[in-house]
Length: 321
Image 1 (cartoon, rainbow, N blue to C red):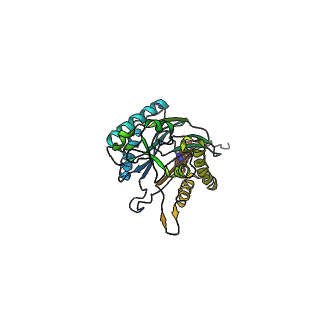
Image 2 (image 1 turned 90 degrees about the vertical axis):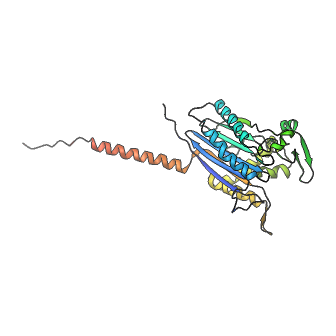
Image 3 (image 1 turned 30 degrees about the vertical axis):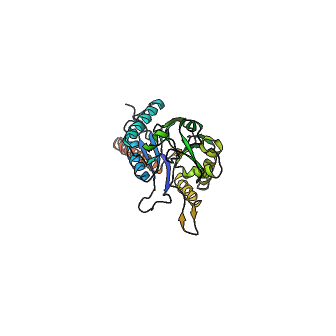
């Protein structure tokens, strides 16, 4: 069997709890995220819970769904095979999440050496953009802004926060849990995407707190409208540029700056949503992976030197006659 090369991308992760959560008791609020590596695959997940037990639902899904996907990933799978794994795993997870009044969004990306296969449920977007900050691809939110979802589900307008919602007041039309909303058209089936992996690019997977400002203040149809997604990329890329393309520092800074927009310095309280960002440099390997490769090379060099030393032929002695 041909040995596959392990790939670990440079990754930055940052999160901040929402206004209703004590960061000491629940550090990430209702959001959960994870990053896993298996052979040539990297699996990135972001889950944004909602409802009174949203943090519990997102926690359960974060524990279950990535594991279901990882156990089915074997070397050299095709993109279509990964699609089927994602569909099957989401269906299995959905059966296990029976909550009626709480739920979670889910965005999972399986990254291979040649492409990115994503499954999206709800409004936690994934965005692929170049090293120059040009938007290449983005997921579509399952909200009233999405024309297909608008036609499919039953929506009501809420004057208090100027928004369209389904059933008892859910803002998304696809999610895990929320069984009470199924009569209004809620689905637990994800939308699948396959993107070719460019030579120089970043992948951002985040919670909807990065998109709320553009939906409510700028009034765009967010992910469905190119300018909404572009503004999110511009915001993240601006931080990347200032942090000299270091994804670890950039993710933390981007979340800090987003939190500041909803932070009341005068009264000392935060009035924003849970905020999560996972940022990947798809070309640059992680420091740990680079160190591992360097250690392996150093060990190989030492063995070679040791072997050469043992195989050295003795110098022939010449005697004068």
